[in-house]
Length: 484
Image (cartoon, rainbow, N blue to C red; front, side, top):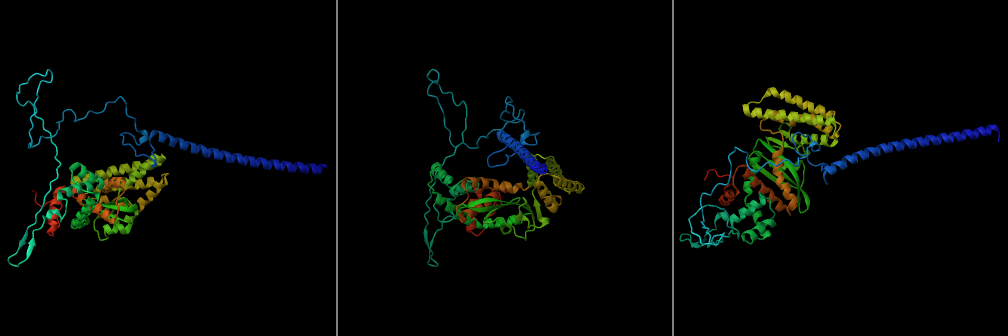
């Protein structure tokens, strides 16, 4: 092999070595990048593991609700309770007037308790009279059975036979009286008890044998009789200046349905629909509604005109708080602080308006400036959720500033949220209703019961009066016009 051939072979081998070294360098860089990525994932998993150990994360949720601890911005910074710190004693503070149960006005039964012999030495005792009074109140659960004997009459003028009718408060030829029906309806619509629990209460607690099927049919019939009252309550709701709307999921025979809540100052209405869209909302609140509507920002409410649509600030504050606590970005904390300062000024603005009776226009400019700061802080946030929220606030500012021109507009939609709370608990325990009739019975029963509670009335007084007035063709008011 000559020198030229030897040089060519050496150059070729050197070139192969260089290519091999370049390939190895590339592999080392890829491995370094993979190691760096895995290190970041390990750090994230360590943080999540610590949150699981501290109880900040629970199964099925991304983060546990924060504990409201004074002086701590999040549950992470909440101080642990001191084990040696004693709990506050029960009762009122020293210097305050005590409170106790008042003595009953009347005594139904008087029982004398005497000793037969001395409890220490079993000696004979001399009765010196009553030395102490102790009063106990209890209930007597009994079933009163009434047989109505309807007399037959003959008219001497028209020669016709007539049968005396049943009392109007019975609601028809029923086997269960109005008081038991009112108690069952109160347990079902106010206490949110299941039909099975109601049947057990009557059968085992009172001694009135009443089956579940009979209770269900009787309550449905009662709600059908109260249909004029329900229709009037929907008209009363649409006549209010401000209503709160909210919706939540519902189950009907295992299928997804939607429970809607409309809440006003004196009226609460419920309805269950098969869809969660604009058409379902307009079935409840038509486009001709001239009042103001407070919502939580769901897209089905976007058809409401801008001058009538107010959105909830509590949902905005919650989004900012969650982004700050979960992602822990400084800019996200700036958004939360800006919203907190704005709401503090907004509450003062509304309180000042209520006190002086005149809209404090000089503070409106400050609130609009603070609102612009919130939008600016959202634009510089690291969380995409806050960036999109800032864009939404920029496009619809009047929805969140409607309270500046209307005294009755609140800052949050908590009124509708509270109305749905007990229904959500019932949905989780009873899995909804069986059919459409059961859904309508529940929604209309909640409508009547919730409106009575808002107006300060009594369900038991109303139901006894309502059945008599409905039989006479009168729509009964929830509260009697003249006090008894």
